[in-house]
Length: 211
Image 1 (tube, rainbow, N blue to C red):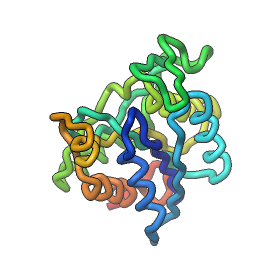
Image 2: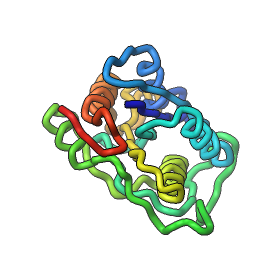
Image 3: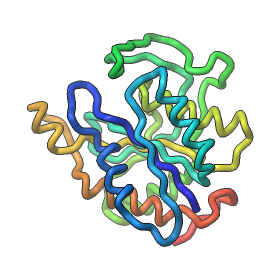
Image 4: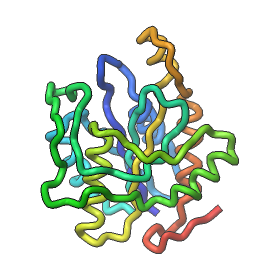
């Protein structure tokens, strides 16, 4: 099985992003039950979707799992739905601040993830990893790439699994910002990611799951 993981570079005056740190570690590991590919996306509304799609076309994965950061959340969020909306609270790293705009003019209002979220939630909970199934991926770059992924899958009638997962901010980020907000360690993020990889089946095209 081949899984493509994507993450984001730091944004909003931070020098870290948990999704990037997870990718860095995945890139150094050897997996015997499948092939793991990684792709770091820029926090740039104009280029991130195209880079995502180019990587999908290049490596032809069985599953695509996009990772991102959700400051203020205390649990890992397994995102259920991507909405057809861009509405940025802050500018992206290129200074673009889009307000109330569709991602795809001819796209559906929303798409649901095709990852087995309930199964993954149960596995994480059993491993004592704080997690939740979330119904809002926001309206920033995370939602944009999530929607782009699911629109690509549905429009091309692909059988690959796809979804988005948000990590809380890292403790170092909260300390650097001097804020009183929840955080989660990178070790726990990595534990969750390994569990996801182990939980997905050898053949994602038939949605087979293994222990």
